[in-house]
Length: 334
Ligand code: PBG
View 1 (cartoon, rainbow, N blue to C red):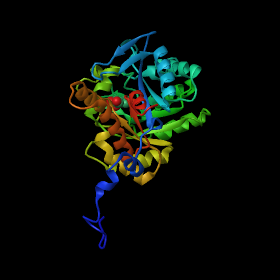
View 2 (cartoon, helix red, strand yellow):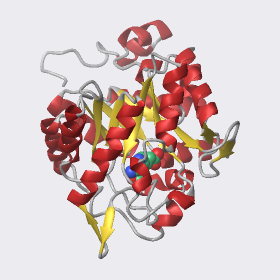
View 3 (spheres, rainbow, N blue to C red):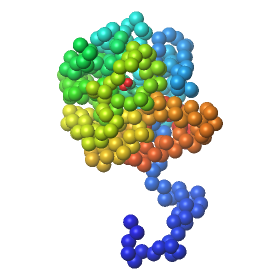
């Protein structure tokens, strides 16, 4: 970067641009605002009920009425969108995850309740079978194998009931092949052309999802099994670009990289290569790491969580799904 003829120290002093708050503000490359935030919410049955998630201090599972209140809070704080994740009662889980296609399931009722009360906040719904299956896998299992095409058919029905309930964005998080195109077609055939697709395109088989699986109750269903035959190998990066290319070709409006902070190199490559809206998911384990260390007094939560957002922006993310969204919005002065 330093070219011949360019002045070096002592003619050049890099600290001049850092000397005062005003010049730091003036020369800052990345900024974070509430516009960058998507708030994931866990919904459970009941009324007026909140249940803490032990591995995610500060995060609670909320009954539908309280999720509706949380969306009101998101609106006040200027958070543009929420993402809904259901805690499916154990007795409704089956090997084929059929409850996912019930137009009166927990997610669909939640979306309808939100839309009755609030406008102006985007509602994103995950598409995958793991909250609904007895085995905790994102797809249908036969002879120990996760079936691709059979699963995609169910995912299309799941996307349809969620879109019908009024959600704005369908977010397939299952990593089956061909699901983005199949869901797009299924929605379009039903006239649901305005519903967007946010594809979890580069989703890795990650240990950082542990606390989420506790929260939605899929951890015990999954047991010692893993998702490595469909989620990506953390060692790979070229493969992430192929995944994104396919999802874009199949009709994704926006793409996501997940997890977030350990995968910022992927965020950067995806953003540079495709230049389309690119989101990163600061997943449950990342939240737990930061929060857990802060709760021990080992790092400053407020500074740490805001810095993490700056890092996502610097890497090229247009926005971040983060469980700390309301706290961050407040810290930013919303
Ligand atoms: C479901 C899904 C998962 C997450 C989001 N959607 C878990 C998984 O794939 O096992 C993880 C989110 C988080 O850890 O915060 N397919």
